[in-house]
Length: 254
Image (cartoon, rainbow, N blue to C red; front, top):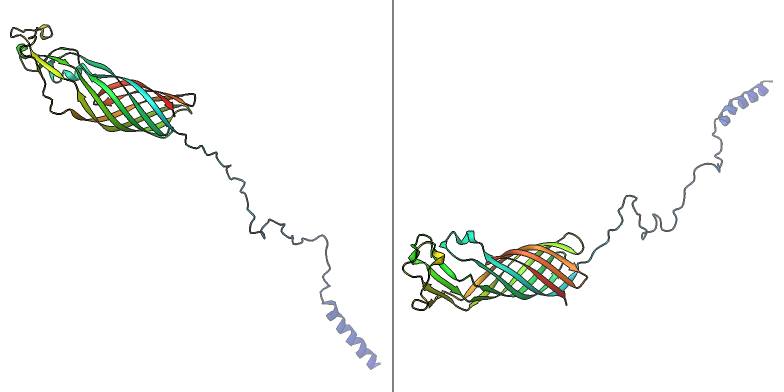
């Protein structure tokens, strides 16, 4: 009997120990599983990832380079109010010049311009008097001077539309004066108005001794350009080229 109780006690004490062991882990088909990356994913060094907020590539517009042969006509003048600063009496200076040129560059950004120009420096023949001189000191002036000039300029182009541009530019050059400037004294009885005083026909006539016939050319210009078709350009411009000018240029693409 004693042995039976001892065996029963041993079995009862051993049972909780076996019950404390965790149950075996069973495969659960509904649980999360590791996914294998697809080809071209993170394991592919050649794969690229596109961001959702990435902007599409903007189209690149190539510069439109061209070279153009041009012909121009310009009205040149020295306004009367500027002449009034030096002369009490004077005539008008207003002439029309012309020339040809060659241009090249990116027509929507910049243009280099080479020009050969002819400008008559021929004020209206008449009496001129320096401010402060008496009427009898006036001089009759007649001119046949012509300015032949070559200059190089740079123009900055600002496109307003595809075929219409604003520009501003400047340049330097050299000019040669040809022809003569002749003077003649007015008659000693000259009185106001000086513009109506007569002058000696030949007794006092002489050609001016010009200090130089080679002069520098300084140019500034601004205006607008319009493309007609793809091969013809027309330009309206104004500026300063030793004298004030305004004119038009026509260009044909080579």
